[in-house]
Length: 242
Image (cartoon, rainbow, N blue to C red; front, side):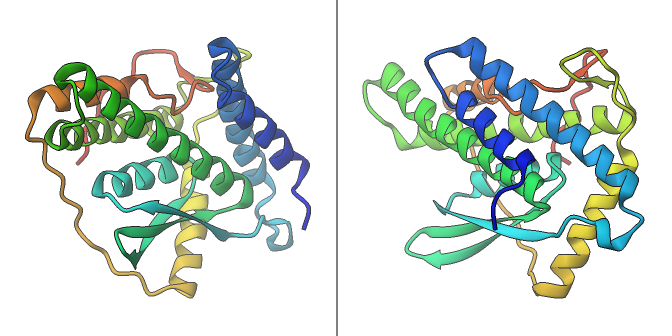
């Protein structure tokens, strides 16, 4: 099946966002991407009363070296973009990370997840070499934990801002409060998961043993681009990871 025009446009913007040659173009692309996806979900909510018009819920997989921090980051990014995430342990230290949602939502959420993970892994090792002259596992693991904590906080902040109706797109237009949009997509995704999988909830634990690594990771979690497409009128309140 060929990608929809929306997906094709998203892929072009994501390619621009991954282009390191121009930071300005990358930022602009991400801003356009997030605004495009938010507007798409709002418009889908307006026609979703007719079952035949509903976009299909499915899942997309990406294999990663499994790390607890990646699970938490993946889950937070999935929820930010109207999806859910689960993982399947494949053995050998690897897992499949599954993003569940409509085609547009899961395509974007998975792409952002991959980009964030690559950035955090690259920066953790670079910062360790800068500070210690080599890659120190305690620093790197603490960096990952610090970055995870901040990224999860930021995702919650963005969701709360979207639900409160305090967000603007890149054209300065205030988007309507998206409580019902999030609720609708969450219900649909969870209904699909219940019908197709018997998932078991697990607790994910991470620990920061190097304060320098944790601080550097939080700073990286602040910098990494989750979304520049929606901006709050006021600074969002940090909600923590509850």
